[in-house]
Image (cartoon, rainbow, N blue to C red; front, side, top):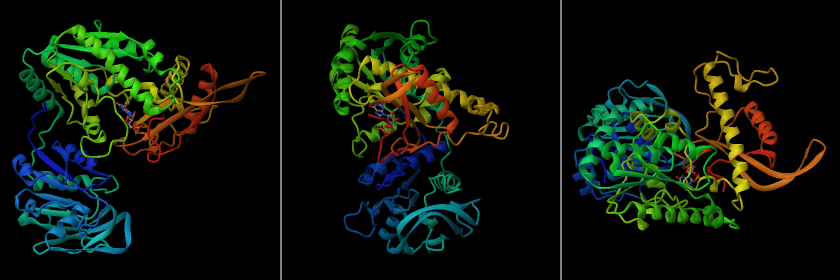
Length: 544
Ligand code: XMP
């Protein structure tokens, strides 16, 4: 069951790393956008009748036989098209222009000189900083095209055929390094495609609630509530649509963060602000029993997933016949789990599994089309408390993917305590930062940044996800007069826009120092704290 919408610009993926980012940028213009593989039939596009089409970049050469391509019928649909990087070269190649390989690649920040007159560059500076990443280039634009921009190494940095509504840019307007990139995307979606910008989260809530209410009728709905942002938002959206026809089952598998299970109950349970049928099952013992002695990460994930399904299945059977099963699947889950055509990286148990085991008629995925920040916005619209809405992502298998080696109650306790301290200190540092007092960043009278100067600014060290994990390493330390032989905790903090790639955050030393001191002093069983500086790839965000 999906959700209807109005304005729509589709992104056709030719293997570029920024395909999702393009869709996000379009949505930032309040225009709905989805990514489709380049194999999508032209008829399907014709039927969908989007307001615009964007071709992504990609690592191939447009002129090679086996490179990803698309039927040139697409150019005759009368729908505006913007080609980006490989997408631009493909447009040139398919329409009779010349694409060549340059002796050296053009990579990084590049000033592009823009010719006046094109709608694509309306209000864009004549010399504008863009992000280039290519070896092939358009040597000659196809007939009917005007060269709209060029750089030192790139004769056709942009080309347009306004009569056919075809536009192409060699650079990447979707990345932040292209300073006026968002303006260019806005010019395309508003000025060229004629979109109104009517994709808003408030209208999403209204449309979804009506749609769900109508589609579900008197049906009974079951939801696996994890307390994470996605399932919480999905549950409240559903409860708004069908009230007590919805039952939420919350499985406390013992692998949640410190105090988390009680916090979830406080919000969604009988004393919380939402009138939900809420069932909490405490089954940590079962999970620990099954995980005993298991060290392989994928095996642990499988066990946690399976056990979760067993518990859920049992609870569902108590409720009786169910018509719909809610899944808090969001757009990046759909893509990363391979359903969108990309390779499966890890088994995400929030997407697969459950449906095969619960007896129901249909799956409801009310957030399937949304990016994370949009889900949070919907949560706010629904009145879910801010601390839950802005909560950082927490994986379905919980602390099971933050414990190296065997999962034991002792290691869970250690990682919970350490993680709590880490999050508490980052929160304190942030509060101090925003207040301009930087309390959290001072130590021994030394100020890490000058107060006031940074007031209200988003700190560059603000991570998108941060947590503590427990390594399986124990080492010798000294505590007072005694020798210790205890665990090492690893702290992780990453910057990422899509969780598919990530960089380690340069956390201020002052924070790491405070956190380390607190963890080794307050958490029994830890005598060492390490900071994980690895990016993804080659690492992953989680430490398992
Ligand atoms: P990785 O470790 O795959 O993490 O680089 C990327 C993002 O996905 C989250 N993650 C999961 N989320 N179920 C989830 O719901 C899972 O099995 C799972 N594994 C990883 C991780 O927290 C990070 O945000």
